[in-house]
Image (cartoon, rainbow, N blue to C red; front, top):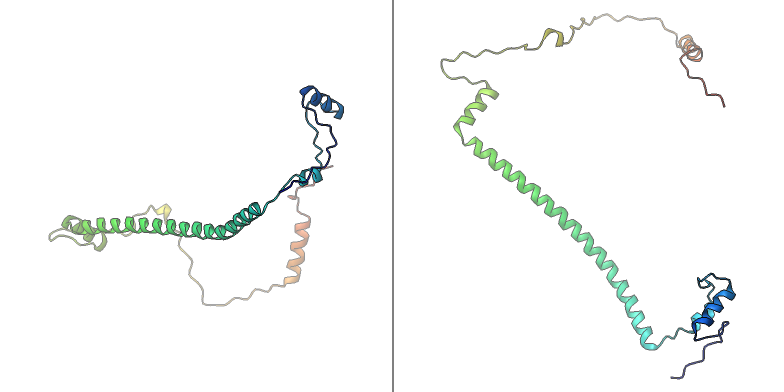
Length: 180
Protein backbone atom coordinates (compact mmCIF):
# COMPACT_ATOMS: atom_id res chain seq x y z
CA UNK A 1 0.00 0.00 0.00
CA UNK A 2 1.47 3.33 -1.02
CA UNK A 3 1.69 6.05 1.55
CA UNK A 4 0.74 9.54 0.72
CA UNK A 5 3.41 12.12 1.46
CA UNK A 6 2.92 14.27 4.56
CA UNK A 7 2.29 17.98 3.98
CA UNK A 8 5.28 20.22 4.45
CA UNK A 9 6.01 21.31 8.01
CA UNK A 10 6.14 25.03 8.77
CA UNK A 11 9.36 24.44 10.71
CA UNK A 12 12.46 23.21 8.95
CA UNK A 13 13.62 19.87 10.26
CA UNK A 14 17.09 19.84 11.74
CA UNK A 15 18.77 16.85 13.13
CA UNK A 16 21.18 18.63 15.41
CA UNK A 17 20.29 19.89 18.86
CA UNK A 18 21.72 23.37 18.08
CA UNK A 19 19.11 23.83 15.38
CA UNK A 20 16.36 22.81 17.79
CA UNK A 21 17.63 25.31 20.34
CA UNK A 22 17.76 28.05 17.75
CA UNK A 23 14.21 27.23 16.66
CA UNK A 24 12.91 27.53 20.22
CA UNK A 25 14.71 30.81 20.64
CA UNK A 26 13.13 32.17 17.43
CA UNK A 27 9.67 31.20 18.64
CA UNK A 28 10.18 33.14 21.85
CA UNK A 29 10.11 30.17 24.19
CA UNK A 30 12.60 30.14 27.01
CA UNK A 31 13.18 26.44 26.59
CA UNK A 32 9.55 25.29 26.63
CA UNK A 33 8.20 24.12 23.27
CA UNK A 34 5.42 26.07 21.60
CA UNK A 35 1.87 24.94 22.31
CA UNK A 36 0.60 25.71 18.80
CA UNK A 37 -0.24 22.46 17.01
CA UNK A 38 -1.35 22.28 13.41
CA UNK A 39 -4.36 19.96 13.62
CA UNK A 40 -4.47 19.30 9.89
CA UNK A 41 -0.88 18.13 9.94
CA UNK A 42 -1.54 15.91 12.95
CA UNK A 43 -4.75 14.43 11.50
CA UNK A 44 -3.15 13.73 8.15
CA UNK A 45 -0.53 11.60 9.91
CA UNK A 46 -3.19 9.21 11.27
CA UNK A 47 -3.58 6.14 9.12
CA UNK A 48 -6.52 3.85 9.80
CA UNK A 49 -6.33 0.43 8.23
CA UNK A 50 -9.25 -1.98 7.92
CA UNK A 51 -7.78 -4.17 10.66
CA UNK A 52 -7.47 -1.20 13.03
CA UNK A 53 -11.04 -0.14 12.22
CA UNK A 54 -12.35 -3.63 12.96
CA UNK A 55 -10.39 -3.83 16.22
CA UNK A 56 -11.61 -0.37 17.27
CA UNK A 57 -15.22 -1.34 16.54
CA UNK A 58 -14.77 -4.59 18.53
CA UNK A 59 -13.44 -2.63 21.51
CA UNK A 60 -16.38 -0.22 21.34
CA UNK A 61 -18.87 -3.11 20.96
CA UNK A 62 -17.27 -5.00 23.87
CA UNK A 63 -17.46 -1.90 26.06
CA UNK A 64 -21.09 -1.35 25.05
CA UNK A 65 -21.95 -4.95 25.98
CA UNK A 66 -19.88 -5.21 29.17
CA UNK A 67 -20.73 -1.93 30.92
CA UNK A 68 -24.39 -2.84 31.65
CA UNK A 69 -23.30 -6.34 32.63
CA UNK A 70 -20.76 -4.94 35.09
CA UNK A 71 -23.43 -2.61 36.51
CA UNK A 72 -25.77 -5.58 37.01
CA UNK A 73 -22.95 -7.57 38.60
CA UNK A 74 -22.14 -4.77 41.06
CA UNK A 75 -25.82 -4.35 41.94
CA UNK A 76 -26.15 -8.07 42.61
CA UNK A 77 -22.98 -8.05 44.74
CA UNK A 78 -24.47 -5.27 46.87
CA UNK A 79 -27.68 -7.26 47.32
CA UNK A 80 -25.67 -10.38 48.23
CA UNK A 81 -23.65 -8.40 50.79
CA UNK A 82 -26.86 -6.98 52.30
CA UNK A 83 -28.39 -10.45 52.52
CA UNK A 84 -25.23 -11.90 54.08
CA UNK A 85 -25.33 -9.12 56.68
CA UNK A 86 -29.01 -9.90 57.31
CA UNK A 87 -28.17 -13.59 57.74
CA UNK A 88 -25.40 -12.69 60.22
CA UNK A 89 -27.78 -10.51 62.24
CA UNK A 90 -30.37 -13.29 62.24
CA UNK A 91 -27.75 -15.80 63.42
CA UNK A 92 -26.83 -13.46 66.27
CA UNK A 93 -30.52 -13.15 67.22
CA UNK A 94 -30.86 -16.95 67.16
CA UNK A 95 -27.84 -17.30 69.45
CA UNK A 96 -29.29 -14.71 71.85
CA UNK A 97 -32.63 -16.57 71.92
CA UNK A 98 -30.84 -19.86 72.53
CA UNK A 99 -28.99 -18.29 75.48
CA UNK A 100 -32.32 -16.98 76.79
CA UNK A 101 -33.86 -20.45 76.47
CA UNK A 102 -30.88 -21.98 78.29
CA UNK A 103 -31.44 -19.49 81.13
CA UNK A 104 -35.08 -20.53 81.37
CA UNK A 105 -33.95 -24.16 81.81
CA UNK A 106 -32.30 -23.13 85.10
CA UNK A 107 -34.73 -23.49 88.07
CA UNK A 108 -33.05 -20.62 89.97
CA UNK A 109 -33.68 -18.24 87.06
CA UNK A 110 -37.32 -19.31 86.88
CA UNK A 111 -37.71 -18.70 90.62
CA UNK A 112 -36.12 -15.27 90.37
CA UNK A 113 -38.32 -14.25 87.46
CA UNK A 114 -41.46 -15.48 89.24
CA UNK A 115 -40.56 -13.45 92.35
CA UNK A 116 -39.74 -10.28 90.38
CA UNK A 117 -42.45 -10.32 87.72
CA UNK A 118 -45.33 -12.10 89.38
CA UNK A 119 -44.58 -11.31 93.06
CA UNK A 120 -44.55 -14.99 94.03
CA UNK A 121 -43.31 -15.82 97.51
CA UNK A 122 -42.26 -19.01 99.20
CA UNK A 123 -44.48 -20.46 101.90
CA UNK A 124 -43.90 -18.71 105.21
CA UNK A 125 -42.50 -15.48 103.69
CA UNK A 126 -44.24 -12.18 104.21
CA UNK A 127 -44.10 -9.90 101.19
CA UNK A 128 -44.00 -6.13 101.64
CA UNK A 129 -45.06 -4.02 98.70
CA UNK A 130 -44.28 -0.33 98.76
CA UNK A 131 -46.70 1.68 96.68
CA UNK A 132 -45.14 5.13 96.83
CA UNK A 133 -41.43 4.81 97.13
CA UNK A 134 -40.83 8.28 95.68
CA UNK A 135 -39.73 11.31 97.62
CA UNK A 136 -42.72 13.62 98.30
CA UNK A 137 -40.93 16.42 96.47
CA UNK A 138 -40.78 14.23 93.33
CA UNK A 139 -44.52 13.55 93.33
CA UNK A 140 -46.62 15.55 90.87
CA UNK A 141 -48.82 18.23 92.45
CA UNK A 142 -52.45 17.44 93.15
CA UNK A 143 -54.81 18.58 90.44
CA UNK A 144 -57.88 20.62 91.22
CA UNK A 145 -61.23 19.05 90.61
CA UNK A 146 -62.86 19.84 87.32
CA UNK A 147 -66.11 21.74 87.69
CA UNK A 148 -69.29 20.61 85.98
CA UNK A 149 -70.42 24.16 85.23
CA UNK A 150 -69.71 25.98 82.01
CA UNK A 151 -68.53 29.52 82.41
CA UNK A 152 -68.67 32.08 79.67
CA UNK A 153 -66.20 34.88 79.61
CA UNK A 154 -66.99 37.81 77.43
CA UNK A 155 -64.19 38.33 74.99
CA UNK A 156 -64.07 40.37 71.88
CA UNK A 157 -61.27 39.31 69.59
CA UNK A 158 -60.78 42.62 67.75
CA UNK A 159 -59.65 44.74 70.73
CA UNK A 160 -57.37 41.91 71.89
CA UNK A 161 -55.81 41.76 68.42
CA UNK A 162 -55.22 45.51 68.34
CA UNK A 163 -53.68 45.46 71.84
CA UNK A 164 -51.40 42.62 70.82
CA UNK A 165 -50.24 44.41 67.66
CA UNK A 166 -49.60 47.71 69.40
CA UNK A 167 -47.80 46.10 72.33
CA UNK A 168 -45.59 44.12 69.93
CA UNK A 169 -44.77 47.28 67.99
CA UNK A 170 -43.95 49.28 71.13
CA UNK A 171 -41.93 46.57 72.84
CA UNK A 172 -38.48 47.67 73.91
CA UNK A 173 -36.99 44.18 73.70
CA UNK A 174 -36.54 44.38 69.94
CA UNK A 175 -32.93 44.59 68.75
CA UNK A 176 -32.06 47.67 66.79
CA UNK A 177 -30.45 47.27 63.39
CA UNK A 178 -26.70 47.99 63.40
CA UNK A 179 -25.61 51.29 61.86
CA UNK A 180 -23.95 51.04 58.48
